[in-house]
Length: 156
Image (tube, rainbow, N blue to C red; front, side):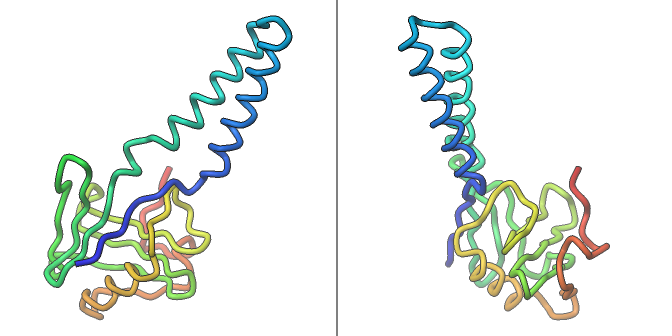
């Protein structure tokens, strides 16, 4: 059994928001409690912390010989047997794949290098390899990049 955790992809932006917000708030306090800089700074700190502490980062993907499942702190969100996966669109050059579970809420994007996703997954290259090793080859479509594929639903 292997476990892969969802991770925030834009940690640098969040930490920058916290740092700039802290600087603004500190400056506002040092200048005699100026309301606008203190409020803007607190807002920046809040946004950065909200992103880093979001519930999305508690999700994890667990694979075993029978299938793949997505879990959170409350338990299993959904489970797919390898044989239930409708198709996989895979980009070996970027180690990115889209796992089609038949319904949008049972599908997974495993983002690799340069993939457009708001999250990353720990050790995604290993997860990519596990998916391709377990899904029947006739259900795997190989593409150069997922962005160029017409087989992957576009996100809004």
